Image (cartoon, rainbow, N blue to C red):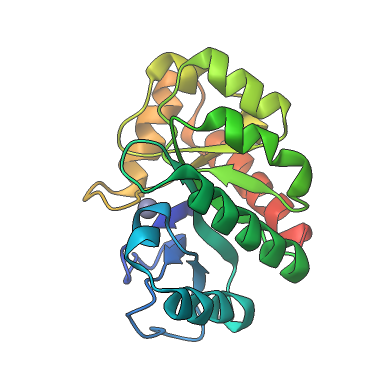
Length: 208
Ligand SMILES: [Zn+2]
């Protein structure tokens, strides 16, 4: 079983277990899928206070597998203190609802690491492209890392299998091809990679 831990494709392939990231504008496609929702740091500056409250209410009540993507972005987003405030609010919602979180982080890893003790459920840094040294400190702190179409090969090679997820995010790539590349880089066979990721996924679900 292939697991795509973060995708924006509403209709993933049937043989793939996918966590589909929903936007607030699009309706809930079906009752049977697994979904994540969260206020993305890119969207914060365009939100009025009432819209923010409305979306937080959706996150509090919608039937979701995970809260996300939420996080911090020092390149593409508005002032960091507003981002941090909303990140903390959504971490608190995830704690209350006992949901895993999916984190978007660009150049703000120290700030994300500082929040780790506040996060009570499993947390996945998605689309990770950092170097091995950053991978190590995030794994030591207890984060899972998810790799997509683009990643640092040395980092993937060194990431422990019990900390790793794979994703298609908004790319056209298939999750199968990412599994294949990662299995090659890690010198393991496809089925043991599948098994490790299934086990990690069970750890996400068990925490709920
Ligand atoms: Zn995404």
